[in-house]
Length: 611
Ligand code: ADP
Ligand code: MG
Image (tube, rainbow, N blue to C red; front, side, top):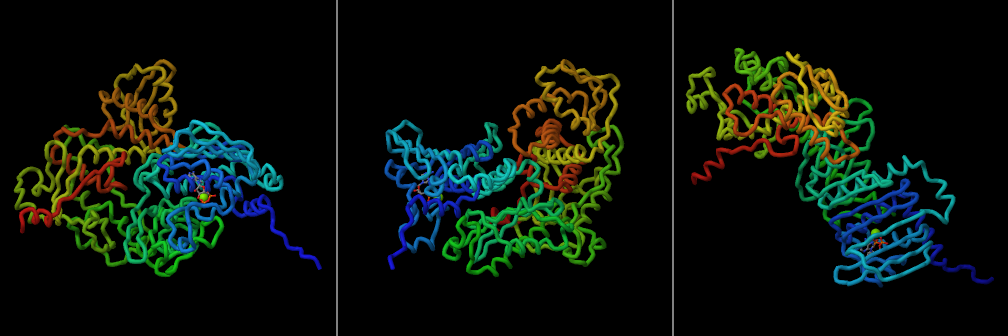
């Protein structure tokens, strides 16, 4: 009988491989983005038309390719990333299989432009369904641009199988976000049908998470850090009350590669045990760094699943680290002040729902009006209310964490500040009309007054705009504002949000704006600055998918109304700032992500005195 086995022609083999590598437009996006990263790009741009069905283009400023490599890159098993089998066990690149470009070129019209820094001219190549159709030398910037058009043009069954544009675009955005989150040190942007969806500037991981998911995300994050021999863990868990109905904000990155792991996901879910409402899923953004030799990435063609040598240990470490961080967060808004022992109840926090500590605030009281007699707000009792929040929470010791600071005992303080004014014990004082200093057991905490107040106001406004509980003060005479018509147009979009913070408008047309009520605590004289700042912020805010009107408004109002550096604060005002700051959800950074306070420990002082 005659021999019947034949080798498949290359283009057929490529089409078959494409079935594995390219399931949908998002798969192409992933492969192209990863190639750009492997090429050392610092800026990567993704252009998409009609959810990738018409065009997917990735432009990078990486190392580019020689003309010969550019042609070769479309061959199957053509890769510059591994040379010998051993390299497979020590991977530092995203790609290594050398089949992405060959597969993509088998099922689409592909145009590549590429140039290395050292070359005068670059090369432009077109390849349609595995067949080269044109090639020329061109002037092009350093780096590579690959445009993939008409995906599955030659496989109608696959093309018809694609979902609606909304669904396919969602998949593309998911891939884009995963890659961008794994590489916060690279600038990424994404455009769909000409409009920009993301503009992510390089920064640290926190910046990247926040710019990817919107400004409000910052408040949700609890840092998770752990270093062990097996794994180094860093990143964030979402506070339990922000947990979601969907699993959209769950991310593991292993050595900067997004992976799916139901097993490790279980570790996180169990760390949240007792803290989540039924049907809700925690958010997390976690980076795991492990020895490349201890994982196997090769088990899945699209490489989102990997195998760890020591999965159980990693499970245990993850679970413990997240649990610890959540415990820290529950006490984080409160410094470990000298606390009333009677308020301490000896139950473990795990048995309880974590709730955001809240201080009852007398919202009708204006802390900065000097006239009235001190409101109950300043009384010792209100201070105790947050000191008492410490109830039932224990923490491991962690020298750098402010959650573990404890206030100096009253006896000690009074011996330093023997103050006979309205407060027997002065715990705070002001330095250079700029910093508020507060003694704590381990030393002192130094607070930037402007940033602290900005944080306080931001959270207050945010709450007002989201739950609509603002109180207005009526103006004696309506206040007319002269603003540019473009300014008024910009403000119009925020009218509802402005009203929810306490502004009352008697007229709001294209030419003029008249106010009859202001949010409580805002002075009439501050209004022009407030609106100027607001218009400026609306006009310069980078639009992003998660653009939130109330966030922008709250940030802007907080910025213009916060007490400035240089303002002298009396003792009550200082205490108000300290007390209110540490009842904020995120006391450590200002709304624009700047450090609000730092600590100086007695140990450090001792060192300086060579003790
Ligand atoms: P792999 O990434 O697995 O090596 P690919 O088919 O994705 O395989 O790419 C083949 C080769 O083409 C890569 O190994 C690399 O040398 C080259 N290449 C692909 N994209 C780029 C790019 N954006 N910049 C520079 N070189 C690239
Ligand atoms: Mg690749």
